[in-house]
Length: 334
Image (cartoon, rainbow, N blue to C red; front, side, top):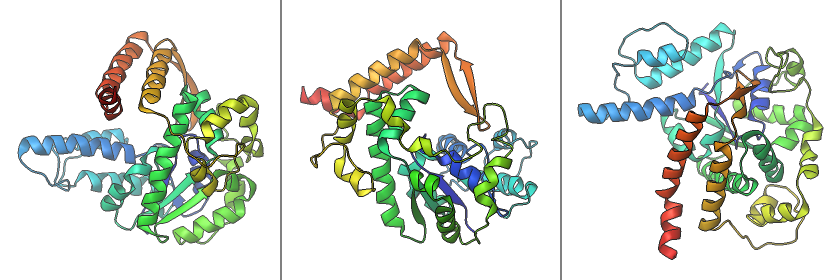
């Protein structure tokens, strides 16, 4: 079977779905995404090949041992391409767990599905979508994002994901709502297993209670499906903010099956100036926020980021904003 990929906006339940699929006797999803490493290595490799005068991504790379070390394997030089190395790492990891098929959880790559399909022809994509208001609130809490920017990101990534899904077709693309997974896990997992062409196994629903990740202190995924996550966001944001979020893409939100609190069909997306202001505001706030919660090995940990590192990131992100298309378009309009 060709590999499968779990995609979605961060904080949309992709880790939960990965754990549920890991409860299947034949499916394996690693705790760390390898797709991000692949794109990082691809960028580094293309730079290397351009310097050497070659442009074939499938060509061997003298520094391939870096990937093996990242994957926890001893260095071994050979003629395998980076893509072959990544597949080999995942196949070995799946075999060590007694699993036959491997997948990867790569939330932010909804806009790169066609590129992934070129690297893995026939790959299957599971697009997980969460209520945009709940997703935006969760991103504000966990990643300190400005809530309007979080909503803008949700719309942008999910629109691209849906468009790419239409292009790929039903044989390669399946869209799943996070709320349906919580309320009717058996039916949703049956759909997913049918999509992946593996038989459904009843223990998948109850597998969270026995997962090595949910039983760790600070486990990112709870031992049981928590229905409270469906509407808990309403207690954390006022009606005016909800209306402002919904106005960014009311028809798209409704088309995905989510009821709106406001009655409007006309979309009012964020202006370029608004995006820039919120981005600067967010970066400035993060500059003075040294304690962050991060996921490491599917366990939530609180880390302290040195001020020097925060300052460096602040200047790099500010520079990126100043040279972004959004800033240039806004500047030309002024």
